[in-house]
Image (tube, rainbow, N blue to C red; front, side):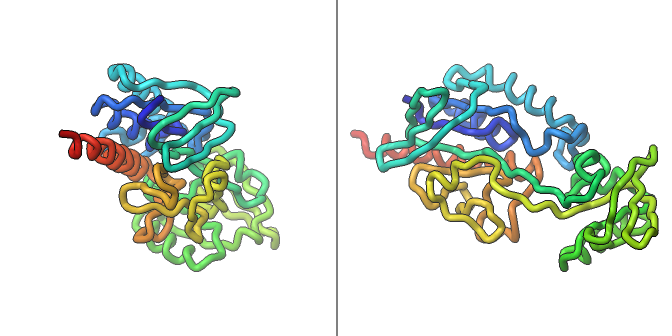
Length: 282
């Protein structure tokens, strides 16, 4: 039996495993190999790793975990999870694994606007986070394909970076084409706009079914409701990374730094809870 099982091998899950490993807690990390940023070649806004390839960051994280004997990593798909007052159960390839605590770090999946060409450039010239991708378009025009009130905020954030910020309703965009060093947007009135990149507002959803299986409370955003340490509405179950959202956040934080911090805090809470048993031992 493990003290903690972590589902998800992205930055939140890896950091949770590292923190638990350093405290010599019996930990299993299960990684399906599916990642929200799988199409991203270079991730940004992470101190000490600005411009890192997400795959390299995961590889280095796994290599670091190898130094801790109490941490086991498996490349495996989880088929089901359950929790009760005595612990959690995780099904993998017909095997039932048990632990005291569960950390969900399975992330979100993005449903992109149905504009031809957007999916082909997703994570490169088409993005949703100005903090992670805005600087790469510095001094050139960018498009914000967003019809919501948030479009004005994006425009204001990108104004010091881009030479021009063009806000358009995504429903008016017929297609997006590669023009070598940028994108060409064709609108339904025949107008074309050349930009360095475009920012869209995908509809995000839970990548895995485990929050629903466990009956976890969720926010209006669809993220799992957690407290500042990642505790969910179900005892013994934690959630970390962009799949989770505390009440004091306006939405899920889709950054590497936030995911790493959330993974660490969830692991710290687990370690402290496990340690409480020793406080009552004579």
